[in-house]
Image: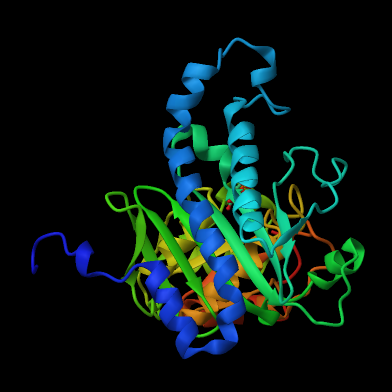
Length: 361
Ligand code: P6P
């Protein structure tokens, strides 16, 4: 109906996928993984929204083992583990997808990071990297979190031993055949692309189905918001600093003063950027995070793939296309910028200019 709740007339993700696969038979072998991801995201959504309730009953805050290494409340870790288990089981339930446990993140590499729950999965045709709950550090404050996934075509030359598969998954984002994310926030929104348009589906709690709400999602050509962790600004390179200075003073190309919006949960920050436009960035900072704080393979590459197919751009710090960047290691981090095409073109001029690239203030 015109004003009432028209969710009944919307197409569900399940129907959308079966129709899409009929029209594009080359994606037939992907339907399994995508349906498994959908099922897992429904369960993770429910876990995330109930975490405060479930844990407060089960957890006695005074227990010492309720606090993980950096002193934050235990439940976040359990939610990480639960989400990883849910995703693993959903993929296994397809009967065709196997899991590989990637090597642990060397604690020497990132002493202040808890172990990411990243999954590497494969079936006869695909190699997938999945981040079950990005931003989980925010979850006990009920701030948004997200599941991220990227799927590569599996070269049939790759045999089944784990090492060759872990090597084969280290591909640049432009080799993905599908990527997407599920945002757990005021609504649960699953956004993905199969290499052409981007589609967004919102979970309707009344029917527990994802229904199409963003058909051919396209990022605005220009925005007026930038999104980054300003606490790192002392270590930034001059190009990014100068670019932001002009946006803050209303002296950028649009002469509009930009606002800063930063949730600290990548999926939320990039979903907002996709819908409202603007620029998201996690640049290097020489004082604290020389490679930024986003793992390339299972965080910024899949997100860049979605942004690209929504008409946006993604770059590394040299201004090169982030989708061309091949991760050397599973947990390798890379500075990244992504967002509206016109904003990114403007930023690129600052990143690629020769002078003033050193860090001298
Ligand atoms: P910082 C969350 O831990 C995360 O992996 C991303 O979701 C988020 O964008 C980033 O790290 C936040 O990093 O250094 O700003 O806390």
